[in-house]
Image (cartoon, rainbow, N blue to C red):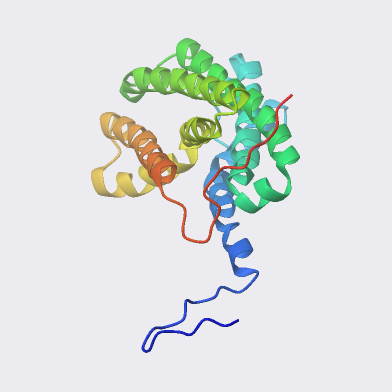
Length: 236
């Protein structure tokens, strides 16, 4: 039976069957693109450390402590690229097992990123004023990344998927900061200059931007017609 439509009322617009699936991929694609520059830079640094062609400005600190640098770059690449696909609702619905397995890899990779970043921040020499200003920021956000990953993992173990989602979004926002710093340094450097203090503040601004976007995403209400509840992924 067809329900009559009130005079003057417009019928609700109908989406094409594939439009929602296509639109669910733009966020992972954008996140991969954001992480592309630091991933490429890290790959070139790995080639250099392996004895290949020097494609980036040399830095004696990397040659002096190659192991934590290599671990940091590899873990950051996995965290940035694999983590982006965790933001696809379609993938979470259709492949919940993949979401769970990828999440475990991301926990290890994310902790690798944070712990090696803390090590490098602590033991690499701080040669200029910018690094002196950045030292407390990197310490705070490195510890924050460890804490958010641990809280996200424990929330998933308790099947508290809302808190799991929130904490993992925050950890990803902290871990993806190098991509945002490309833009804050690029545009900010043109506007404000490239002094030591300015550079440090522009790098720090990237964390603030990422976390602001993360909090907005966490608090955003699902659009009408989209599933509101998070996918429950059974854990062993």
